[in-house]
Image (tube, rainbow, N blue to C red; front, side, top):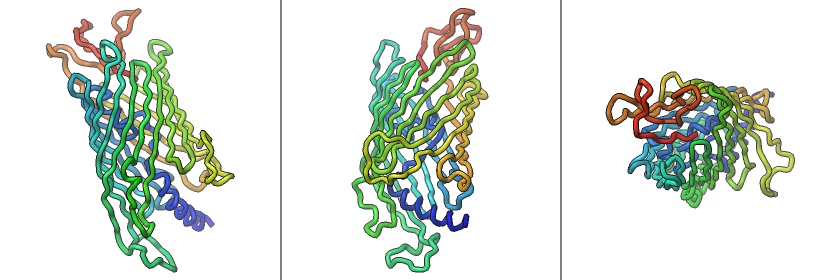
Length: 353
């Protein structure tokens, strides 16, 4: 019975992939460039991060995803540049993509700690299907017997606001590929426009604890709208413990959807560790709470990020990506330049959330 369920589920997954191809990452708040090209240059230093996600571990052919990205700022922080590659496999289908990103970052205050960025990405996407993985008693005449690939151009666009305590962004994916007829025979997935709306903040609770709530709203104008609600508790900016709840939401009428859809999706537990300044290691586990509960198993997601730590001009101090106490009553802002003995260098810059 379970084997029959898995076979039916993979068939449904194959059809679902035509409508919602973009990868779901539970640690989305650390994968900003994947969601929004306007994120490029946000940290104002060279930043590299990688993600690997293994979804629904008990289901053969379930999604496996990987992404690697790097971004940095130029022109005194007014320009952001980024490069991202990603790979995703779902059953017999696979996608490999590479994008270059450019963001123009408008200063909204004198020190540049509040910025509004406008971003654009352009790249190539390779969409493939491996017909050798199909098992059928009545194959269609046009069904591929081996691997079939197609490379197409694509673009993304977004806007991103950030300050020391708040961020918000809106972005759109698949701007070009949605208009390309991928496969007249219907075996390669037809990508659709996706949009992402995200926002979050950083709320100090005391000298050691801070709360970081955020949300991510996703839609492809075809399938159910998805909402992630997330919160992290940060201890001395050395360890973050948090969780998310993901569910479908009804924002506008979609008469074409099945009437009795179960919108529950997953609950997420996540841990982030900062062993040294500039290095982040993260793990998230998704508990399936929807219709797949009891069949799909959990989802594992691992991430790692590194931000280059620059030296001060005189070489006797360094930027520190955390709060440092200057005296008993005042704490310094993020990414401020310090001498090791506590004397503050002249140069300073807000780090954001």
